[in-house]
Length: 352
Image 1 (cartoon, rainbow, N blue to C red):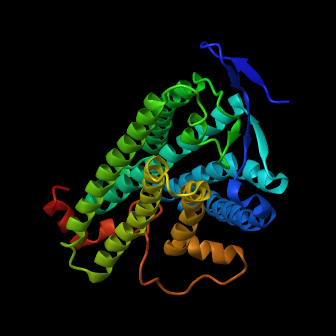
Image 2 (cartoon, one colour):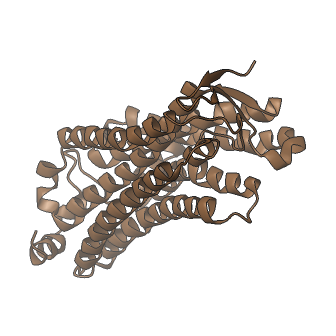
């Protein structure tokens, strides 16, 4: 039986909700289960593989690879915060969730989105130090700094998401208890309130804009410096490695930020678009980045790819890859390109 409570205005407010998934495709939910379950399996296997490879290989216990494993861990959390309940909803055509459970899911969804962005920012900092200040890499990018940055990212995410969740929890939800979505997204829940939600909408947009703009500006500033340094490198192979670093992370960053921003804009402005299309866009930015990221970094990072192939019984790749997502590191975690005289000269020329 649907739970209700009485709001301060005297209206009955629902405390239990039903997630419909894709409301216009109810008769196809059993079929939708198959591709989303496959996506879930790929996500779990890809992220767990990257984490396992980096965990068991001591040569990969450097900040660069630890941040890749952290990104995979965040991706796993993102998937498990949404997919199990979503898949059960497909099997049973809907799923029931309490208001506290819905708010908790909302909290973790947006915390994980911010953590994703924060890890990309940390990786941009790591590459900036490695390429622009290679002689100082070991002293600056220590594991202690990595722990500090991770805690700072977690604190930032909690402090940003908590006000949004708290504000949503104070709304009376008396219009309906049917959420036309597969997850407790902020606007999907807030749209059921029976009083003005302008403050919630503004706060949600401001939080998204601040995170996206701040992180994007910092990341682009980092890669601008990397490109500037790379253009001064005499060695063509080292220049290609630097540009490969930029292209890999800029691709990941563009996909994550653009899909999130586009989904948010369409949700608020595209009233002519069907609810199923809104939900599909949400699925793209909530689920695909966490699935694609470990594949991108696994395929484009030679050291990880070699160890993955070795783990599956194949012989180690012979010879160097034409491109690497990141410069190789020695036993002390110092990027090998830092030992090249032309990189040292380039770093000095840019203030390194």
